[in-house]
Image: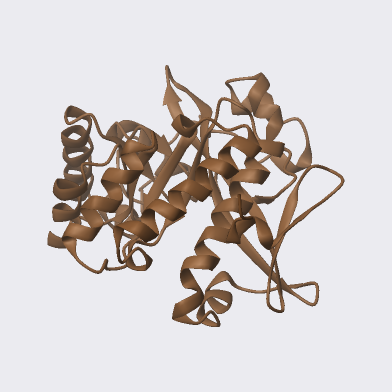
Length: 297
């Protein structure tokens, strides 16, 4: 069997982690925890894989890296980043946690390309010791070649046992249509949009209604970009399934300190060293007003 494009650019390290090489860049995986609300506590439910490029040992922005990749290489770079995240997840994350990885639908222009990508991904999962049921495929906003191609691609992902997440949901017409068409397992709400809605009572009521509507359809929700305690409290009050953001935990390069989460369901108890000390759900008293950053004392 020929060596996959993703694995051909992988370097294995003595600590069990892997890095990638693409041209002048070295690529590393970072993981950010996604927490679930359960009986008034937060527990780590998943991790999102994030690419961190380096050039001559200096960190570069992911956007700058991807902007240097010709369109013809995008498919291969996408495969490499997923391969890297999955291998590192197998090496340094709790075995019960789900793993979110990105898929850009615009690169899958025909079914044979999707089939090849999924075949390679199954090989990587086997090597990493990861069950497909742990993998959540985030379908990003880029336009696909056609709706038919997109639907076929998502059906292929589901057929391989992966779950589907729609990223950056903001409730405009295109987002609502994406939900209807793709029928995802998870919807990740856009961070900026969430914050705007939380600024007013009417906005928060709308947010709560949407979360309830998704839950009734069997769709779990993730609030991204939660950076302050008041946002975390409102996320819980809205009924959101999961939360992700700096107020809970920042991304960490692999190997991470996150394996500790496999031993306890409570991030407060898990915050045993400086690198995880920020992973604490605020439970302090606050003013009675239920929404908005600008609260009267």
